[in-house]
Image 1 (tube, rainbow, N blue to C red):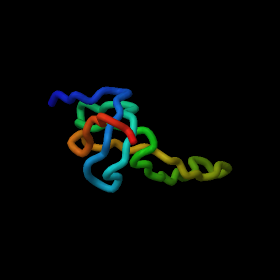
Image 2 (cartoon, rainbow, N blue to C red):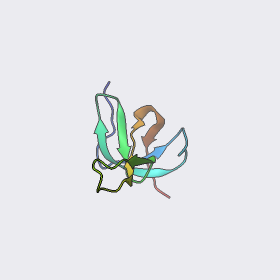
Image 3 (cartoon, rainbow, N blue to C red):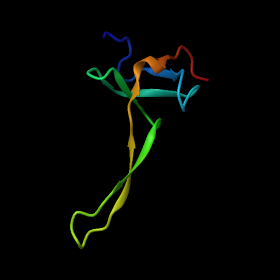
Image 4 (cartoon, one colour):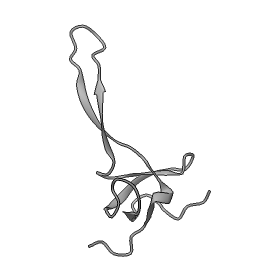
Length: 77
């Protein structure tokens, strides 16, 4: 499906947990019709230690949002 949204576009989220927020597209995943938005939809992932002398850690990862849940922002307030 062809989308008009490109990397670097300013968008507004129109549905979901982050409804009403504005952001900038950091990348477009065409295969899944999803986009990554800077500082939106951040999830925490707990990483287990691989070896006995390592420590585990928590990593924050941006998750993609389906393009049907966003629209191009004409004006950022």
